[in-house]
Image: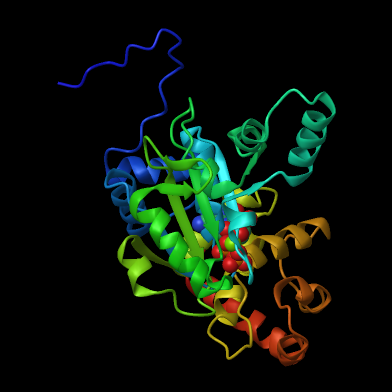
Length: 318
Ligand SMILES: Nc1ncnc2c1ncn2[C@@H]1O[C@H](COP(=O)(O)OP(=O)(O)OP(=O)(O)O)[C@@H](O)[C@H]1O
Ligand SMILES: [Mg+2]
């Protein structure tokens, strides 16, 4: 039997993590995230087995959002580590607050009442430490272990990945001047990658992996219902069918879910209740972000796709 913690200042107990795939699905739905069952399964297993969730997928398919939604629906603190080339320990883990240390030294000198060793020990204490997301994630939190979102890991270099591997193995970080900081309870870790390079197997092995794919039409319509509620049914169905068709084309950069939502919002702003060739041409820059792609689709090609979309939707009986 588990003993209750005898903490007189007991905070409200953390929201429980899902105990089934259905609950994981419900959690994502509660955060306005329209998920497929395979994602809910990966999430459920990652949470239950306390493993990081590794999400890979094209740009704008909703990877980062999963981390944000988890933090919001579980009521946890969100710690986001945005990765980039050259990310180092000082930005990701901790750094000493040099200016405060300098002031402390000056004050000690001026007062003249402390010996060198005491001052030395003092300025390398927690008080002078600036904690970055990885270290913060190991700290206890009354709301429960935080959600650590390590976003776009493929942008960092391999030495950082190796460092991360160590942190995620033991959930501990060693600070030479202070000692080892170990999480009493591991944080909920979500890692995303756009796959601009392969992430090392050793890191992937420690995680539950899920490829976030483009949604099918039904799910994308549902996403619009949630994320662009002002769009009419006709417009949403046409937009989704149009975007789904574009994703079958040979384009340099296919539109993600983010672009579908933005495009719908733009069309709503223009008071559109259905697509027309002119509106498509005028707003194509919201959907496609490369001039070559825009040039390929704008005009007759867009009109052709629209006719095809209308015919398909009519045949589907709406
Ligand atoms: N399944 C979904 N349900 C609800 N909203 C979604 C879904 N997928 C994507 N979105 C929305 O699409 C937008 C983009 O999502 P997000 O930023 O998470 O994508 P991403 O995969 O992290 O993209 P990038 O690789 O460019 O960082 C967000 O506004 C998000 O709310
Ligand atoms: Mg992202």
